[in-house]
Every structure is written in C-alpha cells, then in structure tokens.
Amino acid sequence: MSVDILGPSIADSVLARANPVSKLLAALVLTVALLLSVDWVSASVALACELCLLPLLAVGPLQLLKRIWPLVVAAAVAAYGTALLAPKTGAVLLALGPVIFTAGSVASGAAIGLRGLAIALPGVFLLLSTDPTDLADGLAQKLRLPHRFVLGALAGMRLAGLLVDEWRVLGLARRARGVGAGNNPVARLKSFAGQAFGLMVQAIRRATRLAVAMEARGFGGVVDGKAAPRTWARESVFTRRDLWVLAGGTAIAALAVAAAVAAGTWNFVFV
Image (cartoon, rainbow, N blue to C red; front, side, top):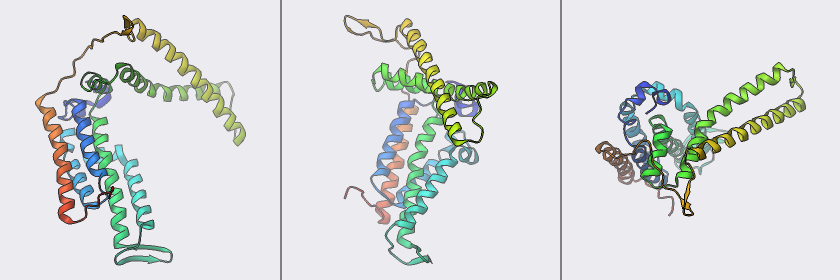
C-alpha cells in the first residue's frame, strides 16, 4: 500500500490492512440501515460507534475534524434548515417572529444532521484507509466488475490531481504572457473560457497517450473476438480481519436499528 497516499500512520493502521472490498461492503450495510429511517437515535448510535473506531484508523479526533469539516458544516446547515421548515409539533422552544423552533422540528433537524454525518463517515474511513489501486484490484478480482471500467476509473482518479496542477500552471503561463483579465467581469469570463479550453486540449492529449500506453501493455486485448483474460500484479485476498470488518459494520447497523426501535423513534421512510 502506498504510504505517500495514505500517510505513514494510516498505512499501518488496522483498517488500512483490511481488504477494500470488505470495508466497502461494511459501509454499504451501515448506509442502507441508516437510510431506512430518519430518527436521531439510530443516527446517534451509529455515529458514536463509528467515532469509537478512530483508533483502528490511527487518526485522532482533531485530525479527522480537519479533514471532514466541510461535511460537519453541511450537516449543521441541513439540520438548521430542517428544524426551521419542519412541521411545528411539540413544545415551542424558541419563537422569534416567523422563526419558530419546536421540540418536534428540532428533533427532525437533529435527525437529518446526525444521519448525514453517520452516512458520510464510513465513506471517509474507506477513502482515508484505502489505496485506489488496492480498491481497483478488489473490485475487479473479488466483485468481478469489468476490468475496463475499473482500470479506466483508476486512471481517471490518478489523473484528477494533475488537472488541478495543470490549471494552476496554465494560469501562471497566461499571466506571464500578459493575458490578464483585469477587473472586467466579461474579460474574466473570456479568460476562464480560454484557460478551460486549453486544459481540455491537454487532457485529451494525455488521454490519447495513456490509451496507447495501456494498449501496448495488453490492456484491451482481444482473443478470438473476446476480451483477453487479464493477469494482476497483486492478488486481492480476504483474511480473518476482513470478516471482523464486515461483522463490525453489520453489528453497528443492527445496534443502531435496535436502539431506535427500543426508544420508539424508528421511522421507516417507506411507510
């Protein structure tokens, strides 16, 4: 696994050594369970259990907050908007003119905010602890997804960072040639369009070179009119650790649902 991508502490963590497919399935089970109901109890239980897994990722709470603060802000905004617009049931907690918060609306807002974080956090754990190449190997070898799609998506992910760098370089090059937009909004729009066109041309050229290189390495080979079987440099394997990961995700989902049912807050969204 690439230490440069994950960082030395995360690369040595328990979750990083698990198969990406098992982490993906565990996150999927938990996500499905949380999508079945909109209530603050199941979301709170799931979120608390997920935060307890931070030692397995070798990431501290402050480190995690620095990485996911946009998600926290988005969840807070969603919670506020829901509490403001939800049906006003229960006791009135705050009334400032047209702005009214009741116990029922606040509970609805808290449910939406906590549910969003609880659903997003497993995906964050997966991204932080997984090398893209390992994920591609697992998807193609274990889930039998088409290797053309998997490797193409992997190449796209690898090149996404280059587009950001090239956009910056194009901007500096245009500025050095005196192609400045100034303060005129129309000129800024034209400059942006020209720079975007240049980036698109470079992306197409790189994609063409990459396609030729992949063909030269046997990608997309055809035998008797059918796609040639591929060999893999690294075999994706399941270990006992992956069983624990999948069992852990299932246990958290079951605990969250059971807690909501016991508390009487379970609200099945399809009813």
